[in-house]
Length: 111
Image (cartoon, rainbow, N blue to C red; front, side):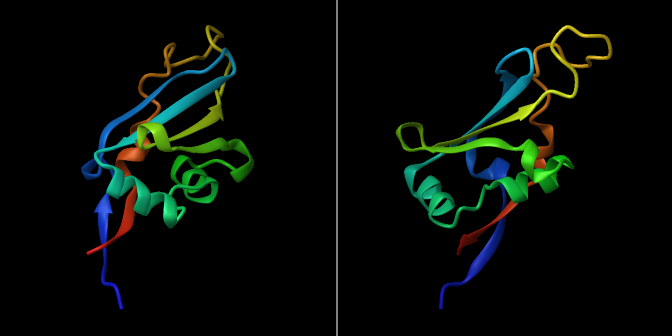
């Protein structure tokens, strides 16, 4: 039986970022430090709409296009912006700070 441990996402990644995808969506990129780590995350579907929705405090339907991108050892996903880009009430014009909730994510990894 394989022993599992909880690991913070930030310890497994080289890049975690958010940015504009359109005036109405934000895109998130999670690039893992190695193919071995990425393959384990992908095999276990450890990053999925349910986990992300809970983390960001939104409904599962708000998590769009979760894509495992093998060529970059990366997971990408999109979410709608709370208000359109450059609209009244916008708090992050470039969406560069929207990835912060991902810093709290812990994942089960083989020990």
